[in-house]
Length: 278
Image (tube, rainbow, N blue to C red; front, side, top):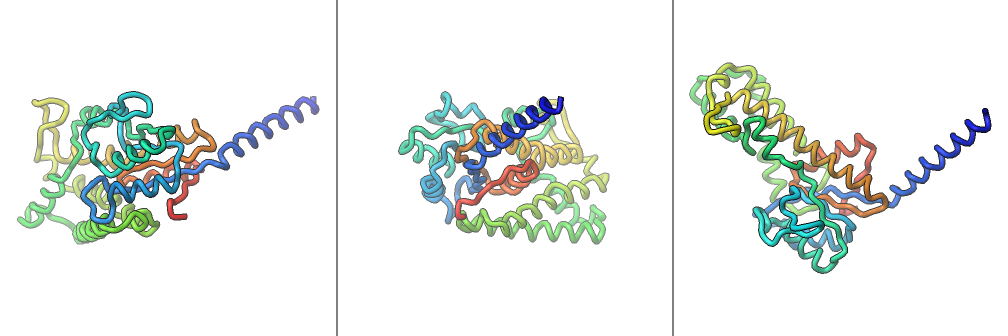
């Protein structure tokens, strides 16, 4: 009996070691980018990173509907001129063996429709500012501080977006973006939930042309989806590709505001990432 247990233990140890060794050569970069309109980040700067890293697999912040077939993007789709897509196409032209995969949460707009939301919630932030200026929103001193801090982080993140890719993908920038997300999703949601005014204002729901939704319900659904579900969906897709392709060099090209959440999620799953400048 002891001999059987020993043999089984040895088999398990060998299998575990083999799996670990397979991933020792794996390299994973989560590259935060600016989709378009940035002075210091463009197709060429993203392409240079791809060219230097020489990935086996490029993951895109996109769904499968932009693909003509496996590893082949359609000739035209919304956003095709973004820095990530153009850099990917340029790299693929010179390296036809590279795999290109969708990493976005599949069916994200269907998720939004079920929740009655759209991609943005700027009107809620504008309403907070409008009511506050009119004196119709009785904010506590702490809530006023939160809004001021939110504006400060927003300005800081806007400044990050004007920098080069190394700065955008630094730990310092990650920390600032994380702080912005805390204020944008969590602290602002607390303000919305603390004031009945946001149960009185309504807008057309994305579910149908006749349904309406309160600002409060909208913002709660929006913050949960954009701040958690979507980022988590992207992170899970990255993990799936990583586990399916041991020993490969993989890079995710994504908007830089998603980067910190995804990296943190991966680290919690004991998946290490590297930076392109290391």
